[in-house]
Image (cartoon, rainbow, N blue to C red; front, top):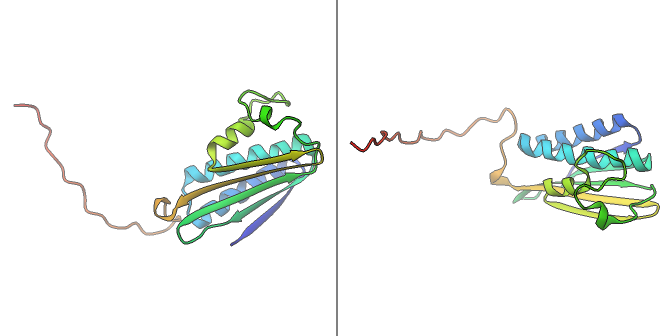
Length: 158
């Protein structure tokens, strides 16, 4: 299991965390769609750290096993906390007047989502996972030769 830790303080750290997540996903064999979903989720969560807490950490972990490829991400800060988590998880709610997808959108694009918040600490944990057979091979892997499908003539009804 590998782990990447990114301190989150300024806007550029959002980009660093996002790219680190994408790199881990690519390295273990996730396809580009999953890489993009993970990067988007990390962007949303780390942006919240910069905007509301000014300092936090993003931990990206390869938590794969023999059957599943899995990446877990934890984003934690010591900011003011989320006063009403239930309300924050509703579509359209924003304290920052942003048009981002926010926490509800992040929850929709990952398989696992958990949030704990109180004054002085917020922690969001997410994960994406795929059965090993459903994952695209890493870049540069040689494709497996498969027979071409049979071609059927178009039936015109004549």
